[in-house]
Length: 188
Image (cartoon, rainbow, N blue to C red; front, side, top):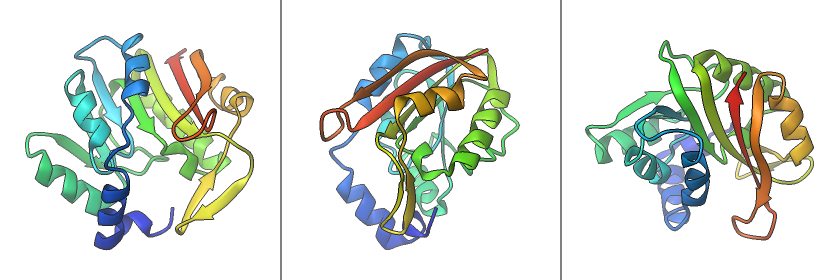
């Protein structure tokens, strides 16, 4: 994934750049299918903006693969639960009712995404729900040293359908019309 999220300077830069961005509209969609107080793992909590919203609704465990973000999260939320996790291996013994990520899974190659989806299936409880957003597009690029893998709706469907019933899959606007995709699925 590159070193961008692993230095104090880049973490501070990202926190500043993302201060006005949150996943409230995604979380509103998730609330339609995942009951309040459910256990939820957030993959890639970053600065904690979405974690703070999710934490008011669910019993949420935050995670990130950056120790710098974990330090930031724990210092700002001393009563929160945070794990240093890689989005592919998701090395935890816990099981959850839901899994959420906002613009995290696009940092994975197609093979890594396939592995992450299998692992998410394993750590979700029966009928567990996942909710992920992606940048919409085609191809890959390196942005600020980070790998970015763009997808279209049908590609996302093919990745998730073997293990999940697709409840919602559509494009939405984060910055520009149709620049993003939201997927919500239920464990088969």
